[in-house]
View (cartoon, one colour):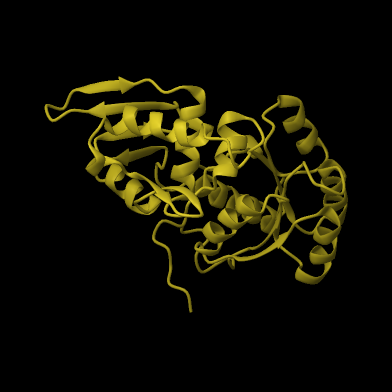
Length: 270
C-alpha cells in the first residue's frame, strides 16, 4: 500500500483514489520524464505516441485524465481533444509547446479542462492533474485559470549559492554577506537551465536541449549545446569546478547533480 504524501492536499487523500493518467506525446524523452514524475506521485500511467494509439488505450485503459500534445504525427491533436471531450468520461489537459493564446482558447473551447505550455514544471503538472480529477469526480465545471497551485512553492530552486525563480525567470547569487546579485542569462540559457531542473536528477538529451533552447534541429557534429552549457556553468559557478552542479552524463546528455526534491527542500527551508 503506497504511503501518503504529506504534500498532497488533504481533500484528495483517503477520499478520491489516485487518478489513472494517459500521456499522448510523440517525443519519447518528454513522455518518459513526465511518466516517471507522475508515477512517483502514486498515479498509474500509460503512454501513447500517436492519436490512434491513444484512442485504443482510451478504451482499454479507461484513464481518469488524459494529457494531450497538440502536435501528433498521425492526426491533429485538436481532433483528439474533440473526440475525448465527446466521451465525457475523463479530464483533458492540453500539453503543448505553443504558448499562443489562440491555441489555449481553442483547446478549452473544444472541451479541454486545462492547458499547460512546454517546458512543463512537473510539480505543477501533477497538481493540475489532481485538480482536474477532483473537478471531474465532483461533476463541477472546469475552471483552468483557478486551478490550485502546488502545495508548496516550487518556483524558487536553490543551486548552491544560486537561486532560480522559475516564475519570474530570474537567477540571483547570494553572497556570503547575504547580498544578492542578479545573474543575467540569455533566453536560451534560461530555457536550458529550466529543462535541467525539471528533469533532475535525470539527464536531458542534447537533442532536447538543442530543439528547446536553441530552437533548431540537432546534428551529431553540432557543438552548440555543449557551448551553451559551458556558458551557463561559467555564469552560474565561475571557474570553480567543484561548484559545477550541471554535469555531463555519458551517452545521455546533461543533468543537475542533485534531486529536484532536495533542491526544493533547500529553498523551502531557507
